[in-house]
Amino acid sequence: MGFILLSAGCAIGIGNVWRFPYVAGAYGGGAFVLFYLFFLIIMGIPVMTMEFAVGRASRKSIIRGFQELEKPGQKWHLHGYLGMAGNYLLMMFYTTVTGWMLYYFYQMLTGRFEGKNKDQVGEMFQTMLDSPQILGGAMLIVVAAGILICSFGLQKGVERITKTMMSLLLVIIIVLAVHSCTLEGGVEGLRFYLLPDFGKMKEAGIWETVTAAMNQAFFTLSLGIGSMGIFGSYIDKQRSLLGESVNIAILDTFVALVSGLIIFPTCFAFGISPDQGPSLIFITLPNIFNSMAGGRIWGTLFFVFMSFAAFSTILAVFENIISCGMDLFHWSRKKSCTVNLFALMILSMPCVLGYNVWSAFQPLGENSTILDLEDFLVSNIALPIGSFCYLLFCITRYGWGFEQYLAEVNTGKGLKMPRKIRFYLTYILPVLLFSLILMGLIG
Image (cartoon, rainbow, N blue to C red; front, side, top):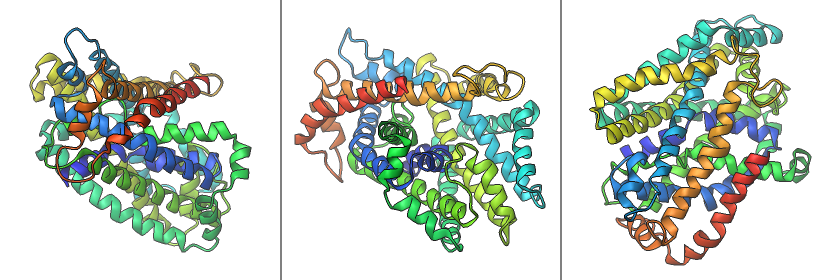
């Protein structure tokens, strides 16, 4: 149970509760959700089993895992450095966005949104972005808290806190979802969200929707950069890895789908467009909470839930980063925590300053930010290319090999990976992953 909640905690984060709803809203609702679930099953779960298998067989983090399993003279271990870079890149903007959640929780708890109209709420969001003190302060709190918890070790620190947060998170989202679905006018939101409308998908662009669904399946599971593999390295061989991967994917998908049940009925009940993009949560929802009876309570609960979800991923990826330092440089846990405390604080500053002091720097075109660049490098390069490396390593004779992978995945009780899946993994999944990489770069 600790392993499932830890791994699900890594998967469940802003990808589910911030990114998933606004991407689903932008790409037509139900049709996007259908494709997302499809790619999660045919692409996400198989790659997750590979990451877990490499982790459990090597008993190392991504920086040393491939080196432990590769044949003499091979260079698969170089992927470890890409994975390590991907973890740092992810945290360079993830810590800042988690700081947004934390700051909004504080503002909702203290009643700062009460009595504000739509324009004033929008100004409050912009005021937050314009202040390096607010963004930097919230980010520093997130980094310091995450490193402190990780310094206690996996079971005493990360597992204990994640178990509590995940349990509270599941209770809060169910309460919020039931409340949202009972709002007057919320049925239209459910229809938009749960009934596929391929006309809306065509309007958004068929290939764009398919690419977004594939990307979301990998982003939400944090696949390809060893964030999952580190927990595979800690577990014993009593349970099969396919069964554990399915359990984690189900829990992750449950949170993503229930997040939509919170947001879309509420949007339609209050006449708010669901395709508002990243501002959907930070500008739209405070307005909605202001219009609701007991809105301050519901808003506080919502941003507690957001903070828990984001922080669970912070802990998981920090654990991977700290383990990489221990494996690569033979540091003690304490030294790796200390070094990474300062490294992550410094590396997270460009994202903070990209909204204010460095706002003139627009790396991906007009109105883009440093966060957009970092998100692009993670979502379109590090995650899919990293997943492609895991796949090739596990299925080809030039890597670890299919037989070794299959034996590791099927060790223990639970669901078994059938041998006949080899054709799909060897000839179809690589094409899908390569297409995702190309479409992401072109898009």
